[in-house]
Structure formats: C-alpha cells, structure tokens
Length: 97
Image (cartoon, rainbow, N blue to C red; front, top):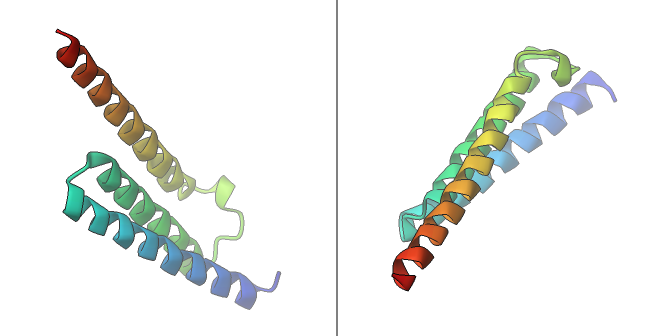
C-alpha cells in the first residue's frame, strides 16, 4: 500500500470512529445508559489512535505505544458490559427479595 493510500485510509477510519462515537454519545444523552457512554469513549480513543497513526506516519501500529490507546478502548467496552451485567444481576436479586 502506498503511503498516500495508507494516510487516506487511516483518515477515513478516524472519521468513521468519530461518527460512531457521536452516535453512541447521542444514545447516551437519550437513555443515560452507561454502556453507551463507554462505547462513545472507546470509539473516541480509537479515533485518536487512528489520527495519531495518520499524522505520525507510523506504519506498524502494533510496535508502538499508540497501540495502548486501542487496548484502553477495548478495556472500556469490556468494563461497560461487565458493569451493565452486574447491575442487571443486582436488580434481579433485589426484585426476588
């Protein structure tokens, strides 16, 4: 892949991650569900990751510190899902009592 094509693709991915994050932020504003906020923050981190890759000209992202941003994004998603499931479980137990 040429450097120009690579820069274009990382720019497109950055924009798409930002758009997805804005959709989840909109859903969070409607419902105040923490899972949507976790997804919005995760997509913002992924957009930041791709933006740094595009502007920094880093071709092998798995060998740079920037990869930690993607790891943090996935950890946010995992924590959001776990928090939502724990909340449901607590609500079920409270309803049974």
